[in-house]
Length: 403
Image (tube, rainbow, N blue to C red; front, side, top):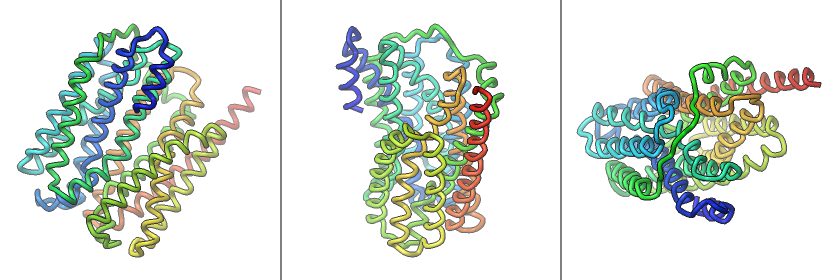
């Protein structure tokens, strides 16, 4: 994010450095939110053991956060209207702090679950307003730089949260991880109070804009692809730590290291996805989803073999890094109008898919075994590949009609 900010400051022209520091404060806020959302994925074994619940049940704290974010994203976009976004962002950051404090002190699973509900409200609301608010701080021709800064915060957090949780949980207690998740948004809150000016919005999203997005068959099918990719990811990855511990029998410290490397490979996938999508958006999504499926199948079939499991996991890391960038570029590339409304719907679908994936994965873990979560993820991704083909045919018909 610092590299993006430095570039932005050089390009900012008449806009002051303080404005770009405001963008950075929003970007760090996005990082803090997503970090707190995904942190428990690396802590499920410890939470399950200490709070005396099944691992599939423990995974529901990921599901409920995403479910509330799914509801809060469009609700905040509608309710915020023309409110000062500085106050909105600060309020949502406070919710993250409250959630993390309660999580760290939770005496039982019910309290922890409630804390994650609070986080979901803050997360969905923040996603809905962060990018447009950041864009208001810079000249119109530099809005893409501010958006990149905010999205980089989200991407880096999505990559680092799970290995960080696993590593902290391996060396300390899972509650320590939530203390870390408290400190980060406290720093963000200070930055926002210092560097965020009043941010007034002169337009807003209406209900008709949100529903209008789904009237396009192409948009609807592409959003199903995104949902399948994300749900397939979290059906399996939410339970990757117990899977590698129980099936592959990897020791805790090696597991933490492997998940950290997973994070690094996913970051590399972020950059790879942008480059590939610039050449062929549809081809990148189809090819990447196919490799995604093969990696999940290999891990599911040969999970007991350390080398095959490790290689499959790292291939999975790269393709998952490609997914958010390539899929969103692909979706927006086919949008004819209302990109802001489409963006709100994409956030809602993304969060709903996280919730659904981790939920059905948890059901599979509780009712069958942790092994079944990986097979379930592969089945969901396979459905996504079928929908990619459908979107390709819709695009072909559209191009013929335009001609």
